[in-house]
Image (cartoon, rainbow, N blue to C red; front, side, top):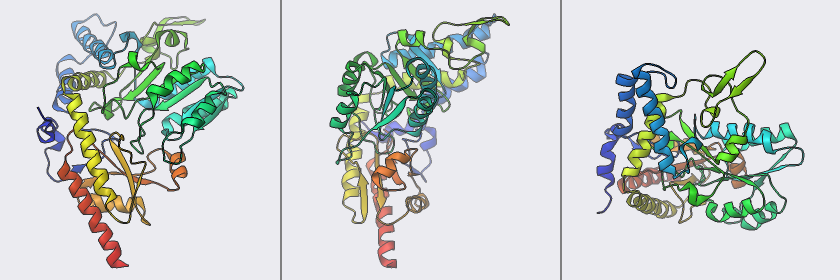
Length: 405
């Protein structure tokens, strides 16, 4: 049975309006009814704080909250649900790792590698950890084609890095990192491996046991779930060894004025009252995604992105960046000689939402020689007519420029 994006989008109430073409899914996806109803159900009927409550409402809330954790373990094929740590998203996950793992493994002369297209939320926490400990942060550069440089990566591994952080899919470009091939090489070099999966989870199934990384982070709102919630998964032995990142509430085992001891996983890294409804919503999003034909959705998205690439490449006066055949979800472009924000405003006036700016990747923009780009990013509910509308609006913009000249 073929995938129908028009039927698929009926599950998204926000897309019922006909005055918006939403091509900003790398920033955040819309939410299906299943997610909205799961969160509303909690607030309407089960609202209570989780854990340690003696009353039945708290017990129901706890079952729903911990049930979401188990669902996410299945979604990721994680070895154990205790390894699934709820965070506010990929940014907090990276900060947790840089502070806690960084405190454990970094010292004077240590080396951390991040890819050249890393998000600021990856670069800055590890940069600050390096500054505190005397370690060095080095980027894995791009090659002449705009992919991560395999030769340079091998040379950097020969330096013996303690940590290697790879972005599975670039949020700014949609380009893929060869994580399947590079993770074993990094681990063979003695590095602890971290994967930023923020852009990957919506577009492809994640099998952590097959992938073999040491840590994996993502945000719920990139995969049809709520904002303000995400997951850090880590190997149990490493999580057990890491010191807590924040203190108070659920992560406490016992406290006196002389000393404190801390809870077991996963609670050790979940200080304070958690984002209960959001975790339940994220579990619902994972359940919903697992019930979809993900292979069919991925094939549709790949065909749509290929169509967009071909249409945009046909426009004279428009430049695409790292627009590879295996890109996932996104394409970046600029109208030659025009500020990206001006192009974005023009598209918005045509009812088309794209993202314009440096996409929290200023070092990458410097490598590309631009201040920013326009980025179209798709989801399963987008379709070919929307790409045609984008191309038509860009064609009008180019004609306006040429006529004005």
